[in-house]
Length: 448
Image 1: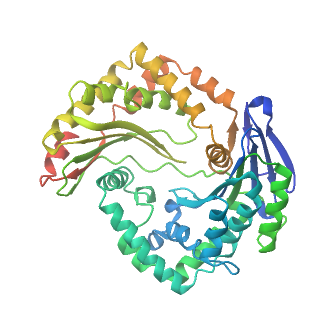
Image 2 (image 1 turned 90 degrees about the horizontal axis):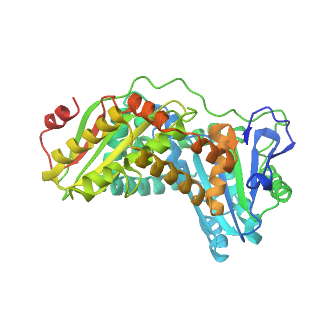
Image 3 (image 1 turned 90 degrees about the vertical axis):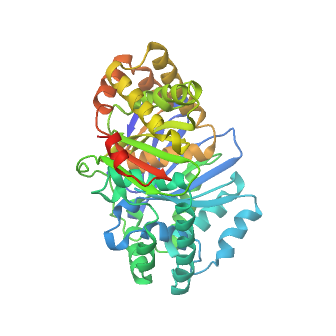
Protein backbone atom coordinates (compact mmCIF):
# COMPACT_ATOMS: atom_id res chain seq x y z
CA UNK A 1 0.00 0.00 0.00
CA UNK A 2 1.17 3.55 -0.83
CA UNK A 3 -0.12 6.53 1.17
CA UNK A 4 0.40 10.11 0.03
CA UNK A 5 1.31 12.49 2.89
CA UNK A 6 0.01 15.82 1.64
CA UNK A 7 0.21 19.25 3.32
CA UNK A 8 -3.59 19.69 3.09
CA UNK A 9 -4.60 17.32 5.87
CA UNK A 10 -7.04 19.22 8.05
CA UNK A 11 -5.36 20.80 11.08
CA UNK A 12 -6.15 18.92 14.26
CA UNK A 13 -7.22 15.81 12.39
CA UNK A 14 -5.77 12.32 12.65
CA UNK A 15 -5.34 9.85 9.78
CA UNK A 16 -4.62 6.16 10.01
CA UNK A 17 -1.97 5.63 7.34
CA UNK A 18 -1.34 1.92 7.78
CA UNK A 19 -3.15 -0.75 9.79
CA UNK A 20 -1.56 -3.55 11.83
CA UNK A 21 -2.47 -5.94 9.00
CA UNK A 22 -0.41 -3.80 6.63
CA UNK A 23 2.73 -4.16 8.74
CA UNK A 24 2.16 -1.80 11.65
CA UNK A 25 -0.33 0.77 12.92
CA UNK A 26 0.88 4.15 11.64
CA UNK A 27 -1.12 7.29 12.44
CA UNK A 28 -0.58 10.97 11.62
CA UNK A 29 -1.91 14.14 13.28
CA UNK A 30 -1.29 17.72 12.15
CA UNK A 31 -1.19 20.21 15.03
CA UNK A 32 -1.69 23.99 14.81
CA UNK A 33 1.24 25.70 13.14
CA UNK A 34 1.69 22.73 10.81
CA UNK A 35 3.63 20.51 13.24
CA UNK A 36 3.25 16.90 12.10
CA UNK A 37 3.10 13.99 14.54
CA UNK A 38 3.48 10.50 13.12
CA UNK A 39 3.65 7.32 15.19
CA UNK A 40 4.06 3.60 14.62
CA UNK A 41 2.86 1.18 17.29
CA UNK A 42 5.12 -1.81 18.01
CA UNK A 43 3.30 -3.66 20.82
CA UNK A 44 5.92 -6.38 21.13
CA UNK A 45 8.70 -4.09 22.42
CA UNK A 46 9.26 -2.14 25.63
CA UNK A 47 11.15 0.74 24.03
CA UNK A 48 10.09 3.98 22.40
CA UNK A 49 12.14 6.04 19.96
CA UNK A 50 11.35 9.67 19.25
CA UNK A 51 12.86 12.06 16.76
CA UNK A 52 12.21 15.73 16.16
CA UNK A 53 13.11 16.21 12.50
CA UNK A 54 13.66 19.71 11.15
CA UNK A 55 13.59 20.24 7.40
CA UNK A 56 16.81 22.21 7.22
CA UNK A 57 20.33 21.03 6.50
CA UNK A 58 23.65 22.17 5.16
CA UNK A 59 22.38 22.62 1.60
CA UNK A 60 19.98 25.33 2.84
CA UNK A 61 22.75 27.60 4.09
CA UNK A 62 23.84 30.68 2.14
CA UNK A 63 27.58 30.85 1.58
CA UNK A 64 28.01 33.24 4.52
CA UNK A 65 26.24 30.83 6.89
CA UNK A 66 27.98 27.58 5.94
CA UNK A 67 28.00 25.26 8.97
CA UNK A 68 25.05 26.95 10.74
CA UNK A 69 22.78 23.88 10.76
CA UNK A 70 25.46 21.74 12.38
CA UNK A 71 26.39 24.57 14.78
CA UNK A 72 22.76 24.69 15.96
CA UNK A 73 22.71 20.94 16.49
CA UNK A 74 25.49 21.43 19.05
CA UNK A 75 24.01 24.54 20.66
CA UNK A 76 20.61 23.04 21.38
CA UNK A 77 22.26 20.77 23.95
CA UNK A 78 23.74 23.77 25.80
CA UNK A 79 20.61 24.75 27.69
CA UNK A 80 17.17 26.32 27.50
CA UNK A 81 15.33 28.95 29.51
CA UNK A 82 14.48 26.31 32.15
CA UNK A 83 17.12 23.58 31.70
CA UNK A 84 20.90 23.57 32.03
CA UNK A 85 22.98 21.18 29.89
CA UNK A 86 22.99 18.77 32.84
CA UNK A 87 19.21 19.05 33.16
CA UNK A 88 18.95 17.96 29.51
CA UNK A 89 21.21 14.91 29.66
CA UNK A 90 21.08 13.64 33.24
CA UNK A 91 17.34 12.79 33.56
CA UNK A 92 17.38 10.62 30.45
CA UNK A 93 20.63 8.89 31.34
CA UNK A 94 19.25 8.23 34.83
CA UNK A 95 16.57 6.01 33.26
CA UNK A 96 18.93 4.34 30.79
CA UNK A 97 17.84 6.50 27.86
CA UNK A 98 19.92 7.66 24.92
CA UNK A 99 19.90 11.21 23.55
CA UNK A 100 21.69 12.41 20.44
CA UNK A 101 21.37 14.37 17.22
CA UNK A 102 22.73 14.54 13.69
CA UNK A 103 22.79 16.99 10.82
CA UNK A 104 22.46 16.02 7.16
CA UNK A 105 22.45 17.93 3.92
CA UNK A 106 18.63 18.22 3.89
CA UNK A 107 17.48 17.81 7.51
CA UNK A 108 18.51 17.83 11.17
CA UNK A 109 17.28 15.33 13.75
CA UNK A 110 17.21 15.33 17.56
CA UNK A 111 16.38 11.88 18.84
CA UNK A 112 16.04 9.80 21.99
CA UNK A 113 15.41 6.15 22.81
CA UNK A 114 13.89 5.25 26.17
CA UNK A 115 11.75 2.68 27.92
CA UNK A 116 8.13 3.16 26.90
CA UNK A 117 7.20 4.43 30.38
CA UNK A 118 9.78 7.22 30.06
CA UNK A 119 8.57 8.58 26.72
CA UNK A 120 6.85 11.62 28.35
CA UNK A 121 10.21 12.66 29.81
CA UNK A 122 11.89 12.40 26.41
CA UNK A 123 9.10 14.43 24.78
CA UNK A 124 9.39 17.22 27.33
CA UNK A 125 13.17 17.48 27.02
CA UNK A 126 13.29 17.36 23.22
CA UNK A 127 10.45 19.87 22.85
CA UNK A 128 12.19 22.25 25.24
CA UNK A 129 15.51 21.93 23.40
CA UNK A 130 14.03 22.55 19.98
CA UNK A 131 11.75 25.45 20.92
CA UNK A 132 13.55 27.27 23.73
CA UNK A 133 17.31 27.10 23.29
CA UNK A 134 19.07 30.11 24.81
CA UNK A 135 22.01 30.29 22.35
CA UNK A 136 24.04 32.55 24.58
CA UNK A 137 27.20 34.27 23.38
CA UNK A 138 29.26 32.27 25.86
CA UNK A 139 27.83 28.99 24.59
CA UNK A 140 28.45 29.98 20.98
CA UNK A 141 32.12 30.69 21.71
CA UNK A 142 32.59 27.50 23.74
CA UNK A 143 30.90 25.29 21.16
CA UNK A 144 32.75 26.96 18.32
CA UNK A 145 35.95 25.48 19.73
CA UNK A 146 34.33 22.06 20.06
CA UNK A 147 33.20 22.14 16.42
CA UNK A 148 36.62 23.24 15.24
CA UNK A 149 38.07 20.25 17.09
CA UNK A 150 35.48 18.04 15.40
CA UNK A 151 36.44 19.39 11.98
CA UNK A 152 40.12 18.79 12.80
CA UNK A 153 39.31 15.25 13.90
CA UNK A 154 37.46 14.59 10.64
CA UNK A 155 40.33 16.11 8.68
CA UNK A 156 42.63 13.57 10.32
CA UNK A 157 40.46 10.70 9.02
CA UNK A 158 41.24 10.00 5.34
CA UNK A 159 37.90 8.24 4.94
CA UNK A 160 36.00 11.39 5.92
CA UNK A 161 38.29 13.56 3.79
CA UNK A 162 37.86 11.51 0.62
CA UNK A 163 34.06 11.44 0.93
CA UNK A 164 33.93 15.21 1.42
CA UNK A 165 36.26 15.58 -1.55
CA UNK A 166 34.09 13.48 -3.89
CA UNK A 167 30.98 15.48 -2.91
CA UNK A 168 32.86 18.65 -3.79
CA UNK A 169 33.86 17.21 -7.17
CA UNK A 170 30.38 15.93 -8.03
CA UNK A 171 28.36 18.92 -6.77
CA UNK A 172 30.88 21.73 -7.07
CA UNK A 173 28.18 24.20 -8.18
CA UNK A 174 25.75 23.35 -5.36
CA UNK A 175 25.74 23.55 -1.55
CA UNK A 176 25.41 19.75 -1.72
CA UNK A 177 29.13 19.77 -2.38
CA UNK A 178 30.03 21.42 0.95
CA UNK A 179 30.90 19.50 4.13
CA UNK A 180 27.92 19.39 6.50
CA UNK A 181 29.95 20.93 9.33
CA UNK A 182 31.24 23.75 7.13
CA UNK A 183 34.91 24.64 7.04
CA UNK A 184 37.13 25.91 9.84
CA UNK A 185 37.03 29.32 8.18
CA UNK A 186 33.23 29.47 7.92
CA UNK A 187 32.75 28.29 11.51
CA UNK A 188 35.19 30.88 12.83
CA UNK A 189 33.32 33.60 10.96
CA UNK A 190 29.83 32.78 12.26
CA UNK A 191 28.47 35.18 14.87
CA UNK A 192 25.98 34.60 17.63
CA UNK A 193 23.52 36.91 15.88
CA UNK A 194 23.75 34.94 12.64
CA UNK A 195 23.26 31.55 14.30
CA UNK A 196 20.41 32.75 16.51
CA UNK A 197 18.69 34.35 13.52
CA UNK A 198 19.03 31.13 11.53
CA UNK A 199 17.45 29.27 14.45
CA UNK A 200 14.46 31.63 14.62
CA UNK A 201 13.87 31.52 10.86
CA UNK A 202 14.30 27.81 10.20
CA UNK A 203 13.10 26.06 13.38
CA UNK A 204 9.40 26.62 12.79
CA UNK A 205 6.57 24.11 13.31
CA UNK A 206 5.51 23.79 9.68
CA UNK A 207 8.97 22.48 8.74
CA UNK A 208 9.08 19.87 11.54
CA UNK A 209 7.99 16.28 11.94
CA UNK A 210 7.90 14.53 15.31
CA UNK A 211 8.11 10.78 14.75
CA UNK A 212 7.64 8.17 17.48
CA UNK A 213 7.86 4.38 17.20
CA UNK A 214 7.63 1.64 19.78
CA UNK A 215 5.16 0.58 22.43
CA UNK A 216 3.21 3.83 22.17
CA UNK A 217 -0.35 5.13 21.96
CA UNK A 218 -0.85 7.79 19.31
CA UNK A 219 -3.43 9.85 21.18
CA UNK A 220 -1.30 9.95 24.34
CA UNK A 221 1.74 11.02 22.29
CA UNK A 222 -0.24 13.81 20.59
CA UNK A 223 -1.58 15.10 23.90
CA UNK A 224 1.90 15.25 25.41
CA UNK A 225 3.41 16.90 22.36
CA UNK A 226 0.61 19.46 22.13
CA UNK A 227 1.25 20.37 25.76
CA UNK A 228 5.05 20.42 25.48
CA UNK A 229 5.25 22.47 22.27
CA UNK A 230 2.26 24.63 23.20
CA UNK A 231 3.79 25.58 26.55
CA UNK A 232 6.60 27.30 24.65
CA UNK A 233 4.15 29.26 22.52
CA UNK A 234 5.37 27.26 19.54
CA UNK A 235 1.94 26.49 18.04
CA UNK A 236 0.43 29.98 17.79
CA UNK A 237 -1.10 30.01 14.32
CA UNK A 238 -3.97 27.56 13.76
CA UNK A 239 -4.04 28.22 10.00
CA UNK A 240 -0.47 27.33 8.96
CA UNK A 241 -0.15 24.00 7.18
CA UNK A 242 2.88 21.73 6.86
CA UNK A 243 5.39 22.47 4.16
CA UNK A 244 5.37 19.95 1.31
CA UNK A 245 8.26 17.58 0.74
CA UNK A 246 11.30 19.36 -0.66
CA UNK A 247 11.30 19.83 -4.42
CA UNK A 248 14.12 21.78 -6.06
CA UNK A 249 15.37 22.31 -9.58
CA UNK A 250 17.85 19.69 -10.83
CA UNK A 251 21.44 20.37 -9.88
CA UNK A 252 23.33 21.66 -12.90
CA UNK A 253 25.51 18.95 -14.34
CA UNK A 254 27.57 16.24 -12.69
CA UNK A 255 31.13 17.21 -11.87
CA UNK A 256 33.96 15.20 -13.36
CA UNK A 257 37.73 15.11 -13.17
CA UNK A 258 40.02 14.17 -10.33
CA UNK A 259 40.77 15.79 -7.00
CA UNK A 260 43.81 14.89 -4.92
CA UNK A 261 44.63 15.70 -1.31
CA UNK A 262 48.19 14.71 -0.55
CA UNK A 263 48.63 13.11 2.87
CA UNK A 264 51.46 10.94 4.25
CA UNK A 265 49.07 8.05 4.93
CA UNK A 266 49.85 4.33 4.94
CA UNK A 267 46.83 3.67 2.75
CA UNK A 268 45.43 5.33 -0.35
CA UNK A 269 41.72 6.15 -0.23
CA UNK A 270 39.79 6.69 -3.42
CA UNK A 271 36.17 7.23 -4.45
CA UNK A 272 34.72 7.18 -7.93
CA UNK A 273 31.54 9.27 -8.24
CA UNK A 274 29.00 8.43 -10.95
CA UNK A 275 25.56 9.94 -11.60
CA UNK A 276 22.77 8.56 -9.44
CA UNK A 277 19.03 9.00 -9.09
CA UNK A 278 17.13 11.71 -7.29
CA UNK A 279 15.09 10.57 -4.31
CA UNK A 280 11.72 10.63 -6.08
CA UNK A 281 12.85 8.58 -9.08
CA UNK A 282 10.66 5.50 -9.42
CA UNK A 283 13.72 3.45 -10.39
CA UNK A 284 15.32 3.76 -6.96
CA UNK A 285 14.60 0.11 -6.15
CA UNK A 286 16.28 -0.89 -9.41
CA UNK A 287 19.25 1.25 -8.37
CA UNK A 288 19.27 -0.56 -5.03
CA UNK A 289 19.56 -3.94 -6.74
CA UNK A 290 22.33 -2.63 -9.00
CA UNK A 291 24.25 -1.21 -6.04
CA UNK A 292 23.92 -4.42 -4.00
CA UNK A 293 25.22 -6.56 -6.85
CA UNK A 294 28.02 -4.18 -7.83
CA UNK A 295 29.52 -3.52 -4.41
CA UNK A 296 27.03 -4.14 -1.62
CA UNK A 297 28.54 -7.17 0.12
CA UNK A 298 31.11 -9.94 0.15
CA UNK A 299 29.55 -11.67 -2.87
CA UNK A 300 29.41 -8.46 -4.90
CA UNK A 301 31.29 -7.98 -8.15
CA UNK A 302 33.78 -5.45 -6.76
CA UNK A 303 34.52 -7.35 -3.55
CA UNK A 304 35.12 -10.58 -5.41
CA UNK A 305 37.31 -9.10 -8.14
CA UNK A 306 39.32 -6.59 -6.12
CA UNK A 307 39.72 -8.30 -2.75
CA UNK A 308 38.97 -12.01 -2.99
CA UNK A 309 40.62 -12.86 -6.31
CA UNK A 310 43.52 -10.38 -6.26
CA UNK A 311 43.97 -9.24 -2.67
CA UNK A 312 44.41 -5.64 -3.76
CA UNK A 313 42.31 -3.93 -1.06
CA UNK A 314 40.88 -4.62 2.37
CA UNK A 315 37.81 -2.42 1.87
CA UNK A 316 35.98 -1.98 -1.41
CA UNK A 317 32.28 -1.24 -1.80
CA UNK A 318 29.69 0.81 -3.63
CA UNK A 319 26.98 3.05 -2.18
CA UNK A 320 24.15 5.36 -3.25
CA UNK A 321 23.26 8.89 -2.17
CA UNK A 322 19.82 10.27 -3.05
CA UNK A 323 18.68 13.87 -2.63
CA UNK A 324 15.65 15.85 -3.73
CA UNK A 325 17.18 16.86 -7.05
CA UNK A 326 20.29 14.78 -7.56
CA UNK A 327 22.04 11.56 -6.69
CA UNK A 328 25.35 9.73 -6.83
CA UNK A 329 26.56 6.17 -7.14
CA UNK A 330 29.93 5.95 -5.40
CA UNK A 331 32.65 3.30 -5.42
CA UNK A 332 35.16 3.36 -2.55
CA UNK A 333 38.43 1.47 -2.19
CA UNK A 334 41.28 1.62 0.32
CA UNK A 335 44.57 0.07 -0.72
CA UNK A 336 48.34 0.31 -0.49
CA UNK A 337 49.58 3.41 -2.34
CA UNK A 338 51.63 1.26 -4.71
CA UNK A 339 48.46 -0.54 -5.83
CA UNK A 340 46.25 2.49 -6.39
CA UNK A 341 46.57 2.54 -10.17
CA UNK A 342 45.78 -1.16 -10.44
CA UNK A 343 42.80 -0.89 -8.10
CA UNK A 344 41.45 2.16 -9.89
CA UNK A 345 41.79 0.50 -13.29
CA UNK A 346 40.12 -2.68 -12.07
CA UNK A 347 37.19 -0.78 -10.54
CA UNK A 348 36.70 1.14 -13.78
CA UNK A 349 36.88 -2.09 -15.79
CA UNK A 350 34.21 -3.73 -13.65
CA UNK A 351 31.96 -0.67 -13.86
CA UNK A 352 32.39 -0.62 -17.65
CA UNK A 353 31.63 -4.33 -17.88
CA UNK A 354 28.39 -3.98 -15.93
CA UNK A 355 27.45 -0.96 -18.06
CA UNK A 356 28.00 -2.92 -21.26
CA UNK A 357 26.82 -6.42 -20.34
CA UNK A 358 24.72 -5.92 -17.23
CA UNK A 359 24.61 -8.43 -14.39
CA UNK A 360 24.55 -12.19 -14.63
CA UNK A 361 21.39 -14.01 -13.56
CA UNK A 362 23.11 -15.13 -10.37
CA UNK A 363 24.33 -11.63 -9.50
CA UNK A 364 20.87 -10.21 -10.09
CA UNK A 365 19.18 -12.79 -7.87
CA UNK A 366 21.70 -12.26 -5.09
CA UNK A 367 21.46 -8.47 -5.36
CA UNK A 368 17.68 -8.44 -5.23
CA UNK A 369 17.60 -10.90 -2.34
CA UNK A 370 20.18 -8.86 -0.43
CA UNK A 371 18.14 -5.68 -0.87
CA UNK A 372 14.98 -7.44 0.36
CA UNK A 373 16.68 -8.88 3.42
CA UNK A 374 18.51 -5.70 4.34
CA UNK A 375 15.25 -3.77 4.14
CA UNK A 376 13.35 -6.06 6.48
CA UNK A 377 16.17 -6.73 8.94
CA UNK A 378 17.01 -3.03 9.07
CA UNK A 379 13.54 -2.25 10.45
CA UNK A 380 13.61 -4.60 13.41
CA UNK A 381 14.07 -1.93 16.12
CA UNK A 382 12.11 1.13 17.13
CA UNK A 383 14.81 3.63 16.11
CA UNK A 384 14.81 2.38 12.52
CA UNK A 385 11.01 2.44 12.39
CA UNK A 386 11.01 5.98 13.74
CA UNK A 387 13.45 7.12 11.05
CA UNK A 388 11.43 5.45 8.31
CA UNK A 389 8.14 7.15 9.11
CA UNK A 390 9.84 10.51 9.71
CA UNK A 391 11.57 10.51 6.33
CA UNK A 392 8.38 9.34 4.66
CA UNK A 393 6.62 12.48 5.93
CA UNK A 394 9.44 15.02 5.79
CA UNK A 395 11.31 14.19 2.58
CA UNK A 396 9.38 11.62 0.54
CA UNK A 397 5.82 12.83 0.92
CA UNK A 398 4.59 9.24 0.86
CA UNK A 399 4.64 6.15 3.05
CA UNK A 400 4.99 2.68 1.60
CA UNK A 401 3.94 -0.38 3.55
CA UNK A 402 6.50 -3.13 3.98
CA UNK A 403 4.58 -5.34 1.55
CA UNK A 404 4.55 -2.54 -1.05
CA UNK A 405 8.32 -2.00 -0.73
CA UNK A 406 8.98 -5.73 -1.09
CA UNK A 407 6.61 -5.88 -4.06
CA UNK A 408 8.50 -3.05 -5.76
CA UNK A 409 11.80 -4.85 -5.22
CA UNK A 410 10.31 -8.11 -6.52
CA UNK A 411 9.06 -6.25 -9.61
CA UNK A 412 12.60 -5.25 -10.60
CA UNK A 413 13.78 -7.32 -13.55
CA UNK A 414 17.21 -8.14 -14.90
CA UNK A 415 16.45 -6.00 -17.96
CA UNK A 416 15.53 -3.06 -15.68
CA UNK A 417 18.94 -3.28 -14.02
CA UNK A 418 20.73 -3.61 -17.36
CA UNK A 419 18.98 -0.52 -18.72
CA UNK A 420 19.78 1.56 -15.65
CA UNK A 421 23.40 0.38 -15.58
CA UNK A 422 23.76 1.31 -19.25
CA UNK A 423 22.44 4.79 -18.44
CA UNK A 424 24.36 5.58 -15.24
CA UNK A 425 27.62 3.66 -15.46
CA UNK A 426 28.72 4.89 -18.90
CA UNK A 427 29.19 8.44 -17.63
CA UNK A 428 32.63 9.87 -17.04
CA UNK A 429 33.15 9.63 -13.28
CA UNK A 430 34.56 12.10 -10.83
CA UNK A 431 37.45 10.86 -8.71
CA UNK A 432 38.68 11.76 -5.23
CA UNK A 433 42.00 10.49 -3.90
CA UNK A 434 43.65 10.95 -0.51
CA UNK A 435 47.12 9.54 -0.04
CA UNK A 436 50.89 10.06 -0.36
CA UNK A 437 50.89 11.31 -3.94
CA UNK A 438 52.25 14.47 -5.54
CA UNK A 439 51.17 14.12 -9.15
CA UNK A 440 47.49 14.99 -9.60
CA UNK A 441 47.75 14.67 -13.39
CA UNK A 442 48.06 10.89 -13.20
CA UNK A 443 44.59 10.73 -11.67
CA UNK A 444 43.09 13.17 -14.15
CA UNK A 445 44.26 10.84 -16.88
CA UNK A 446 42.72 7.84 -15.10
CA UNK A 447 39.21 9.28 -15.42
CA UNK A 448 39.61 11.09 -18.74
